[in-house]
Length: 171
Image 1: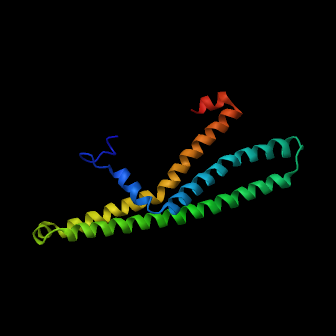
Image 2: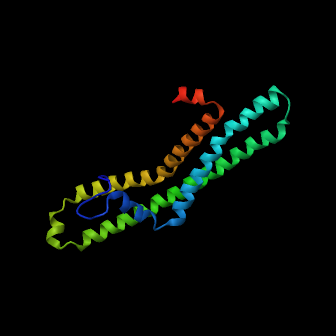
């Protein structure tokens, strides 16, 4: 709560940044959705590998072709989802960065001449550039980070369903 509270009644930086991001709902949904979908598929790949090792190679009770096709299909699907995440995550980051730059310019130009003279131009430009680069990097990497949390949770669930004692040891 403290991280989201700016000043007296003002929304914190997370809410303001989310407001900028939600100006582009298609980019947000596609970047986040493709990240979550790709990580969910990636979490299920070890189950296919388990079936191949146990049933195809070990017991010879299943045919190899459909399971190998499932692995190839999963790889293609993860590739497509990763491409979509990177493309739309990058677009979102650039759009938000542009909006922030435009708003900063508008704020500075609203100052009267005396207030503008009080500003240290180099410091303002340097700080703005570094802060906007950090925000762009955050927005670009955030869908992947959220997807990795989902991957961890799904993997934990799969591990628990396969062997509860081994999951306890891993934790």
